[in-house]
Image (cartoon, rainbow, N blue to C red; front, side):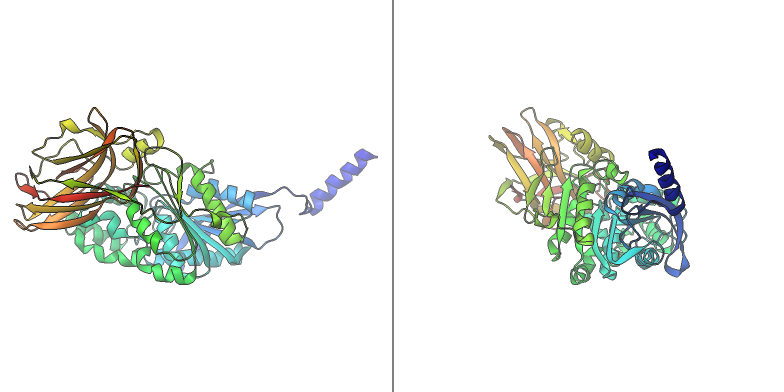
Length: 497
């Protein structure tokens, strides 16, 4: 009798489908073509929850990174669909791989594709138009922020390893980030179809006219659209790495400070996209766990307490537990006075910023920071200034600021400032750095330069040291070999927690 009843239940379940109330939550994945701006085909993985009824379901849209196809977020998307009931659309950005169109460097068509994907998901994937979030890494993160300025339906954004100011990222203090530009160009040509804007920008770069590229930055930078994002009330989470060799953290920290809606900033060790890499594949990852909680609160409306937590969460660049702040840290500062020096320009030294993707990744994953033996730095080619010891150690937290008086003998000189923690043997670990270009032969001038922000734990008995030289392999150097740079009285201010 019991066996017969079981067989009847199995037969009814097969014919009618399992009742929604007892079906196990899961997800389905389909490969779809979505019509973007101008009818351009965008290829997408659509991940939908199963066993949770007929919807509508909250929606997450995830544009893929530069040169990366739509499979990038499928692991994280499946987890979000199964565990939290989201419809997730992970699609290849226009101009890359199997999507149509041309690469326009986050131009209007690429940004408005996000809204077209939202339209499609509402019409075809049981998505709830009142509960929409957008997330992405790198190029996808930049699109997410720009789309939030344009489309008030977007309630929340998670932008990871992204830019908020394109010119400031690739052209800091009028110095071309050569390794980053070359990497982006090579990847774009290898995996996509560059459009006119990208091709013209590349021509200007190759011809030494990078300043002509700068005007396209504003329309492609969320920093210029902060008023629209604030007016829309979008909840914005940003996660970047301290050593991001493409989109350094200073620009996102400044952008974060101008947001007036719900916001969160997470900065941690590593290089471009390394901090959240495994989370995109669906593996355990503290950044993506925070992303999930952010969307649960600000898209689904779940009262999970994420908005009551300290919004600025910073993990020291040389290891340690997260430090949490109510706002960007601006605590007491130490000032190092820098006496006059004269150096010869155009020759490299053992001090440099490392290699993008590699140096930061080693620091983030293996705690092996880019370092240098300060005794081996040629004092004829670099200025070296040492500060006092910290007998009990110290925690640096914030943005070091350099005020330097310089007189170059050449019309154009590139300077590179490096801040090191130095131990008793003279071995230094690179904390942060910044390039800067000086123009005007024989003209004495004072430069106010912000190094990239950091949180760094200085060991007991160690000291800080500043090095300034004129050549760095990461950047396009414009120093003239044999020219000189004379430093007048200057200072470095370093904030502490």
